[in-house]
Amino acid sequence: MNTNQLELLRSSKILVTGAAGFIGSNLCEELIKIGSTVVGLDNFATGHKENLSTLKQSSKFIFIEGDIRNLEDCNKACKDVDFVLHQAALGSVPRSINDPITSNDVNVGGFLNMLVASRDAGVKRFIYAASSSTYGDSIALPKVEGEIGKPLSPYAITKYVNELYADNFKRTYDLDTVGLRYFNVFGRKQDPNGAYAAVIPKFVMQFMKYESPIINGDGLFSRDFTYIDNVVQMNLLALVSSNQEALNNVYNTAFGERTTLKELTTLLKQYLAEFDSSIADVDVKYGPERKGDIPHSLASVDKAKTLLGYDPKFDIKLGLKEAVKWYWENLR
Image 1 (cartoon, rainbow, N blue to C red):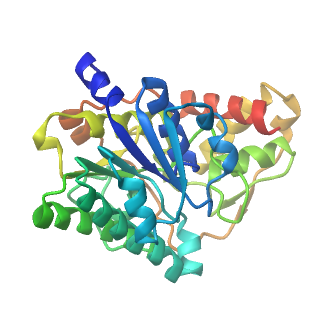
Image 2 (image 1 turned 180 degrees about the vertical axis):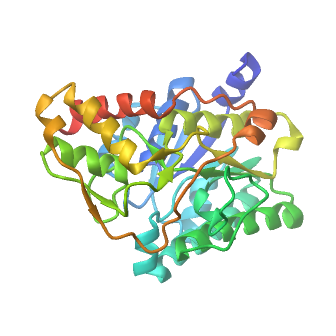
């Protein structure tokens, strides 16, 4: 990032929704480190208060406890804000299959509230968390932004609707937006607990307890696992980019390599065994495939590299080493 871009961040007031969540809290910490004034909004439905403990020590951080399903909360959070990084959502394909109504209320209704509040507050740019689930039943690899299939879950539908609304708000109200299609993000602060925990933190915690993780399917499904620092980089680039051609687009946010679940567990055991050699002897088990899961996911990040200058630094191995170290030091 150049001097002008850093100065833009230091002089800006930036709203991060979902600030107590995994990605949101990492974004807040990076922005505070740079010198931005940050407003955080969260209702703690999936976020955690402990993720805010360090942030609340900074005079540059303002926290609002509120729900994006409440337009008044959104209006309050957007007041006098320059930019919005909208991360708040109910994630998880299985969660959306079990309870499609709540996922829709949060991910579509809440998203629309945030767009309206951002429009009314005169926000300069609205960057939002889109999803690789939007590619649906498309079998093309790698995934290219302009080619999607039919959604395979209610969650995927909600995230695609977000993209449609964002495009419409540019056309109708001239609100600049950027959508970031996240591919299996992982890293520090990602919650390992609960029925809808993501695979990497869940498996790490199981290995540390000498419990056998269960892979859904035969272990050959593959994902473009994306370390949190790559995602933070993409958000900041979308925020500061002066390239008008880069705006009002969606971008794959990934590393651009795929790893099978079988390979993933092998790497996790290897890196955890460096802290506790007994973990190398923990077996992996296999169970039925999950509804709504796509077999393979691999992103092309060429568009982000060309238009935003994206340069991801963490591949799966480097990211996993960092993540495993964090879990071992903080949650063991």
